[in-house]
Length: 68
Image 1 (cartoon, one colour):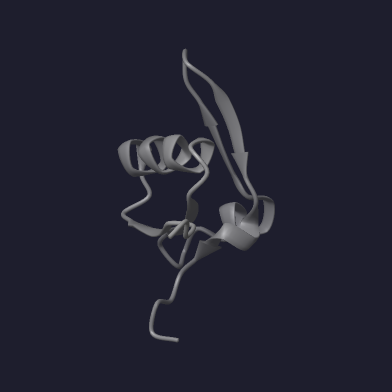
Image 2 (tube, helix red, strand yellow):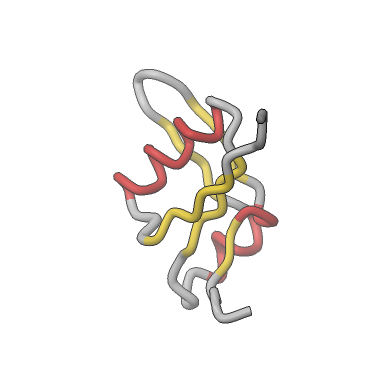
């Protein structure tokens, strides 16, 4: 059985975003739960910059409400 892993990162600060980006690079479907007041991130997405890699997380992978 070869199913895509779906992961929700709760707490997408520096550490959560970094590990979530690593999981996306590995092929997992990662959604990042961010604080609702992060309007700029919701508009433009999230960019991860590290000595290992740089990655842009599009805004459609970000959410502020997990009740749905």
